[in-house]
Figure 1 (cartoon, rainbow over the protein chains, first blue to last red):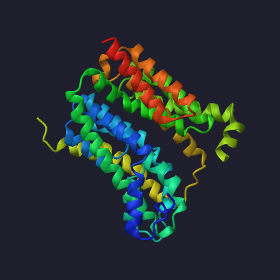
Figure 2 (figure 1 turned 180 degrees about the vertical axis):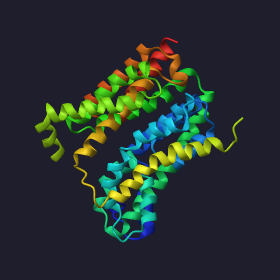
Figure 3 (figure 1 turned 30 degrees about the vertical axis):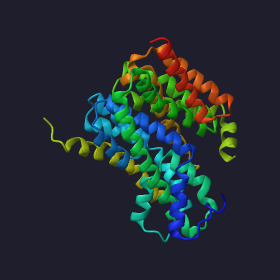
Figure 4 (figure 1 turned 45 degrees about the vertical axis):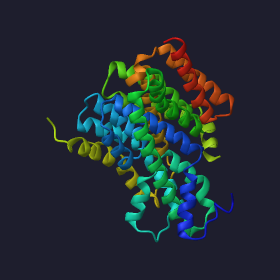
Length: 248
Length: 111
């Protein structure tokens, strides 16, 4: 284990990163992209369009929101607003992961390429593994991990897309359920401070309400109202506790 | 009819650009922004609530084949998945497997 995680050449590092993609989080990601493929087909997209999304968006929440917006006939601006709100979370993730992998000497285009791969699974695996590696092999390790995960997920995407048309209702339904189940559990896995738990609870309670009374802008309202509520409550009522947990 | 390339351009603008803009801002700020800042805490809460709202919607008002199942079966599957997840100290794979197993069992037993 330590031998494989302690590569010396750039090529070895890229291969070690690639091998990390075949892990438990990678397996869950595979399953949820099978689910995404099924969801994309259910929403009326073509296979090529869903694969294009996986390669060029590479953020499951953004992709699911976009598929949903296209499926419900939303316009370009409304779709972009809904997607971009979902993607704001990538800013703090990028800010925290980039200094671990890259250094000041790396070029801006290379950093932008690396930033494109920032998503929950890549972030978790990078923060867990990369700090143990020597500085000069971190970039190839990260790129090996990222390219392999994207490739695996494109295979899963195509598989889910083609399976959902030929299997019965129970299996097709199970594939569609994978995405919300994976999102829910990965949010709960990542939850540390009280604000995280409150935000998940508020979003779950408000989501269906806003969808019923304000369809189209429901995700925006759910995020703003639920998130602000959770943030305010954790600052006022659990202020001290939240700060202590943040620091820990 | 719309051109064949229009959906791809739509995806690039409303998907790639709308998503990658935050990653690129992350590149710009990665040396300057304090990750513990209060604004980022709020932003994180908003995005968490937004994704949680999407989760609830995908379960309560589902798409595709999942729409052909009853709300009780879907909620039961998610509840069992959550219970197993927490019982095994937040084991994601076990939670997902349990939820999916309940859904499949219910759909095959009560078609």
